[in-house]
Image (cartoon, rainbow over the protein chains, first blue to last red):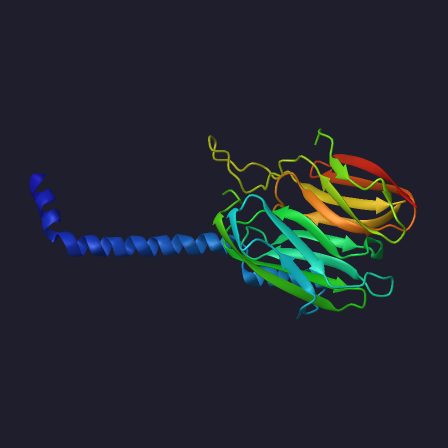
Length: 160
Length: 108
């Protein structure tokens, strides 16, 4: 028993380093599998295109307001506003908010009427990790606009 | 879903004024991804999936919620005051339970 122990300690440093390297690889591996289960920017884009009926979004008109750093991902205030006069002829029909790094990309979607007068909604969302939050708006003439905001998250709020 | 939701609407407004509406309801918004620490089983999803606000029977805003909305869903939005009337708010959860609230506003 004691001899084998000695032997392994003699093999020592290099072996240990190798082992550590393998360990690091394993960690990277598990990292990949968890991110596979979560939403990715591609999945988020898919959710948006499903919402807009396949129409591509033009960047602009949509603003996502989020804190630069969210210390607690369990509840993060978020405001989506769309630059629109909100008249019967020209208004925002619907808005979707998507998180690229949460377990599922969709956060909330809104159907809006011109009676709102202003296309701005605030709510509170969960954020699993540091990520981009994207909002897309479908206007009454069928055009689609989007806006993005990156948010750093200290403690994730999606459980697991 | 038993607790009363909180709704903040101005009692009176001038015609054409942009008013702000705030709503808050208590709900744990269980995501369906959390595990019970003792049994290791997933806790089933239980969230409020729809919220709607209408004025004099006409829908102003409808929200479809997903598990990424934080617990105790809060919404703040705007409406244009055109006439006196009632705002109706309805929340529906995964079990099909609904909670509603209404608030009157006079437009001078």
